[in-house]
Structures are given as C-alpha cells and as structure tokens.
Image (cartoon, rainbow, N blue to C red; front, side):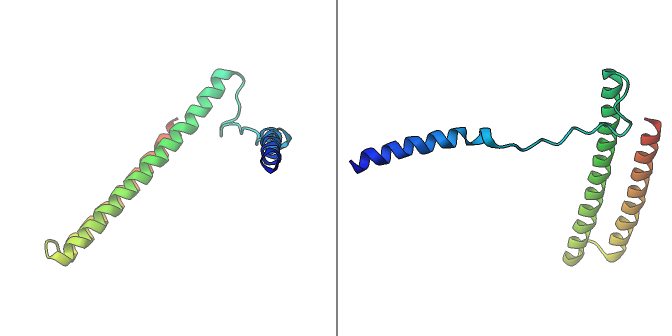
Length: 115
C-alpha cells in the first residue's frame, strides 16, 4: 500500500515539475542596437554589427598584446634569479613592451576611425 502511494506521489510530482516552467514569466532583455544605430535596412544593420565586431576584434588584439608583453617581462624576471639575464634586460624588455602597447593601442584607435 505504501509503495503504491509513493509511486502515485512520484508521478504527480514529476507531472508538476514538468509543467512548472510554463508558469515562469521572466522577460528576456531586448536586443540592443549596434553602436552606430539600427540602420534603415537589414544590410545597414548587419554592417553596423560588423563594425562592432571589428572594434571587439581590435580590443582582443590589444588585450592579447598586453598579455604577451606581461608574460615576456615575467619570464625575464624569472631568468634574473637563475643568472641568465640581468636587471638591464628586464628594463629593456619592459620599455620595448610599453612602446609596443602604445603603438598597438594607437593603431587600433586609427583602425576604428577608418572603419
């Protein structure tokens, strides 16, 4: 008897859980327009989304270059303790890395203006 009641209650519970998501009334956020606006037609809107994707790709390139400069400087710092490099090498790599970052950021900014 108890097993029959347990089986029935399990079936009722599973049925309730199956229909539970239908009562959720959450609204999805509205999709935002691209940074240049929605455009007059579908092609112009796609071009505007492409512009945003190109800006995001430039940002990813700048972030990757920052990562590479930082990892290079950290590896040079690790080689100082083993005696393979000296502090002048670390300063030179840090200086060249900073110049490289400035150039990359400048190029990404110019590319955004060209787009």
